[in-house]
Image (cartoon, helix red, strand yellow):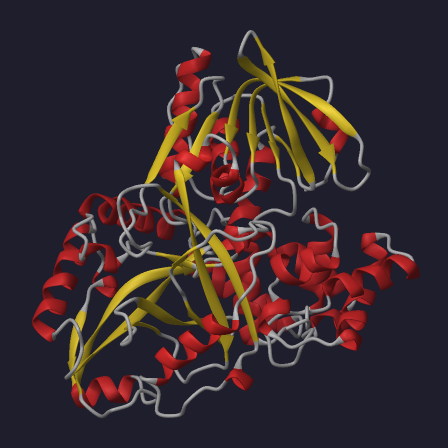
Length: 524
């Protein structure tokens, strides 16, 4: 994945996609596979906004059954099943626990009915994804850290998990392999119109500050929160802020779906890279879309609701990291963001620009297929979706279970610890062989970057060499999420930066700037 701003110039494209999050990446990948000439631009790093601030779940959305949104749930469950099959390295099963207490808003009978419906909406559901009921004692044994006062029992059910940024990166890589020109740190600065219809755009390289014009027959705006702030978007969209905290690990490899007792909202405790994600919040947002910060009241809310369920309370000193993002939803009559639809819609402005509105990480592939259908119709091109049931770009061609064992064995022989190897394989898929070659060249690079987290130095170096990272925080927040999973001080950041300095062509002055840029904001 090499960045080349000049490749956008002096070439007409069938399609320009603006926005390098999950919707832009899926759209560019599908369109390129259909044979269209495609350009994809992103003003920051890939997945640097909402698509790196999700709950990292590929799921149907059990809670949407309460609002009777069966169509959305069924669509998402179908995508979940397909992604599990087509991308086993990228999307893996994750089981959820649902405790039922004496004062729970939803009782055992209602929960059983909801889970039966959830399973029924999933076609060809495998036995390991089906829900199960547990009485009080076995459920408490399964989740020993949960408070037992009033616990009546509970359920478990199957869903799936991913690394949201790695998902976007893989799709961008796939789009480039199919012929698309993809450039990050490339800001859209204006439309070019001919007779009232868009015929291209002007963009500026955020590194060299050079500008160029891109000629495109069709344009898709998939810029998320920036769409919501645009003139047409203000009438179509509402913004909902979601905050997550990174907490210490809990003694389980299963997640929990819980209900906030103060207001009835759903939140999660999710194992991720050896830590626990706690979130998310759900609140209307009207602040600065370029600086979405975690607020103290959001931290207090999540800790208070989590502690209603935990035997040992978490405090703000247990918070290792945090992040916040904005969900774009269709504007409707709903008073609260909790009640607003998570479904997706395509709008086309009078000048011909297509706008992607709303949606979910899970169902973005199918929604993007509809976007490309609309583009192809406008171009007079008769092609069908190229991503359904298509194996992912970095997925091994061999039987995955057998391949995983072989890759794990090779990792062990190279001195890579078992937990790091598991995540390394998930992060890179068949490209893990490139990381192995780096370790073969220097066995010291099999060591972890931070002792408590499953990331090795060779992984970081591979990302620096071949994943279009520009800044240190690109590497440490998105290529691997160390900045939110660990408390890194200036000395830690300098040590890490020195591992990749040669690959990134950083001199001492640049390295110092990058360390300063990656330092956490302590202004609060």
